[in-house]
Image (cartoon, rainbow, N blue to C red; front, side, top):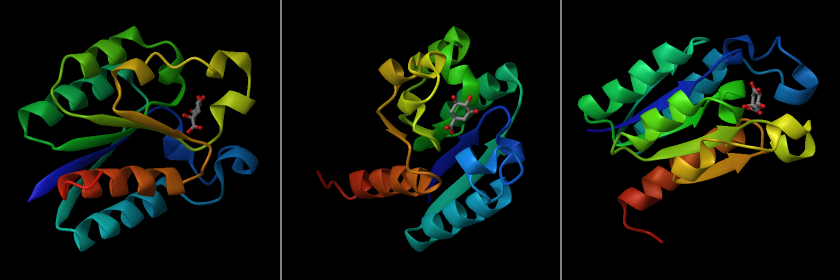
Length: 148
Ligand code: DQA
């Protein structure tokens, strides 16, 4: 069975409570359950992990490669904008990452306009709410089928 890792970074454990006008009212559990369910429909095992700690996210990226994960859906939270360590971890694994942001980072503060993750990612989805994670999963599903 092919495996997808759903990885969420700092403060995303607070979804539903945290700035709901920006991030919505659904919780991380709601999101994870949805992606697990959508994965199962296509025989994809979805593994979920969230951490507020940079090193734990890096360990998970390494582990993903070592355990044969086929694709990673990753919202690195604020690390997106400055973590060269996470950037290097992604560059150093042979596992495609799709970067997801719930909010439209480009219409927000200037510091959010830069992603150090985007250049080492397969693609980026921003501003579509939690649907962005579903679209990332869809991209992996369609790629698997060889669709363009
Ligand atoms: C975010 C955008 C980041 O700028 C912010 O620090 C987050 C969430 C998003 O999903 O929109 O924590 O990645």
